[in-house]
Image 1 (cartoon, one colour):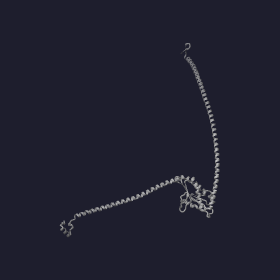
Image 2 (cartoon, one colour):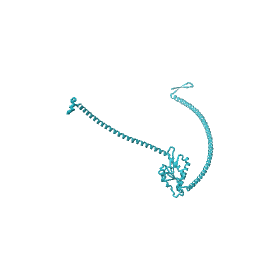
Image 3 (cartoon, helix red, strand yellow):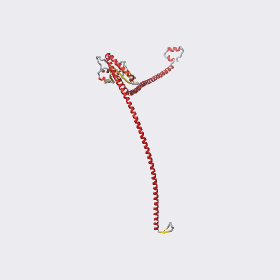
Image 4 (cartoon, helix red, strand yellow):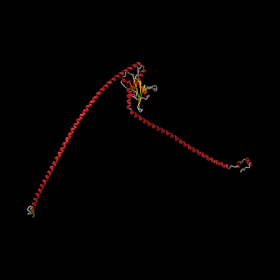
Length: 395
């Protein structure tokens, strides 16, 4: 049995175990449900409060972010507006600068066009004057041909070439030598020799010139090839690199009238009219300047090779002389040894002779010591008598 006390009136009731368990179970279920409902309500109230706070916080944060984004949008719009304004200003400045540059270029173009037209007009005038001067020169040469002898015509061509060269010497060939060839080698000589060296003394260019002309009335006409063999020999005799025939011969030949002609039969030989005299020198000089570095390297290599050859030659001469001196010294040494040996043998003979002489001296001394009057006068009664008369004993 279980006793149960009423909480209101204090009366005590006795109940059976099964009834007590049922009552306890009812009370426990009711309390549990009440507590569950109470806790659920509390949790729900807490969740609602938290949800309300979170919603409020989220709304506030959203409002702040929206405000920041609105401010960012305003700032970006301001930047875009400022960039657009700067772009418009830059485009305007660029367009203005471009228009100014176009105006300047148009002005320069107009000025250059005016200058070019003036230069063209000046060149045309200069060409006209040159053509007139050439016509005058041609007429003068023709007049000289008619009036002068063959020798005088040739000398006039030489003077023409010399004057043409001297007119451009200081501008084009300031360091060049161009003079008459007055040195006769094996009975011949050329007309002019051109030589030029670099500032460091390297030979740059050398040309042997021959000038040929003749009068129109000359009975026996010469051709240019008649003089090439002699010109090539003169070039080699004077050590020139090139040979050039400046000629007025064969005046109707299109080959020689069209420009510079290479005489292929000979090495480094050209045939030109007087008007191509200076241009040919310029061409050969430019070619020589182009190969100057190669020539310097070649001369350096040759000099180095020459130094090596001189060193080897000096070394071989030293070895040869040293060898000869060694052989002579060895021969003299052998002879000295032989002479010493001969001297030793001779001294040994002298020693032997002296030794034998000493024995002979000893024997002679013994004989002298053993010598007496008795022995000397033995068999000689006359000397015995003389000694006796002298009172000398024969013992």
